[in-house]
Length: 386
Image 1: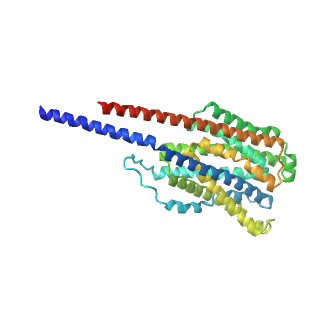
Image 2 (image 1 turned 180 degrees about the vertical axis):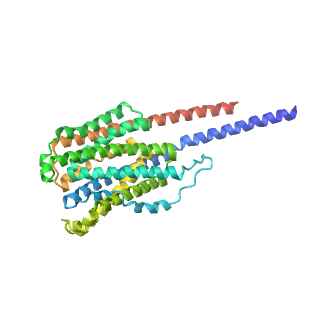
Image 3 (image 1 turned 90 degrees about the vertical axis):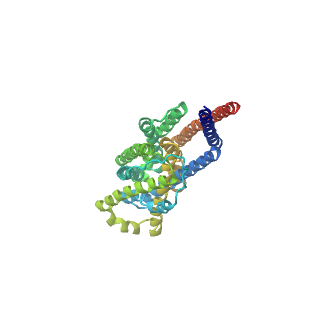
């Protein structure tokens, strides 16, 4: 009898010790998120800056290429993906050692991952070509604001593929940003711009439809990327962001290289460089700068998907759309009408609405964590009293 009571007492003590360990672990997790929380915001800001800056500069350089004598659609598309080698050194950075208590996630099979990167690469190649056509036939202001329609497409895909929840502020953001791009479609008074760019009405419509189709395709690609993160990789890390950005760019580059040589445009590139208005050096620098910008844009975009969602990544991209038209007005002397100014204001308003919802979610998350911490403290007190 004495032995059995001693065993029972030791078991009870063992359970109490385990319970205290669990409570202490939970308390540390709830008290410690301050550093993790700030780290998350810093990473999100860095990725956002990458998207905003590289998108504006890349768009402007792409337009300058066509303005100053560039004519190759395949080359202008290829430079948007070919700079992937600059990311390869980041693949050799060793990841931090994970906690032994964290469950090890099984790596997806090579066939699944390679198929995913091939599909994403095809998406990127097709979208980049459509965007190139739009940028060739439209002014930077018109092109950029039509791209805002991708947020509406992304909202639809996110709802069905990523189970995105819609609150009044998010819906308000989507409606306003859609109105921002719709103003240009309804206005459609770019006759002077089309004359200056020697673009016929048919080419203008072709450029408009190409940009719209590219926006829909890009939105779908973002949702597929988020779905892959949730269902295939089931984790997030800086290395995975670099891997995804690199391998999908390799796949897209291979497709575009085939297109460049199959179309025969490669034979005209030497002549094109010699006749470029700003000179050979500027021609090469333009292509290099464009390629670097779009590669880092891919990193920033994928990073925002991993840290928040595909919808948020798209919202940041839409926020950056007014930057390119402003630069185009300064450097390319694009016409900035009152309708376009209103469209920019609506785009910024829509972004602020979305960010306010994210701020509310953050406050709610903090309140829930405080509530859990209070509950754990009360349980701990009861255990100590007993």
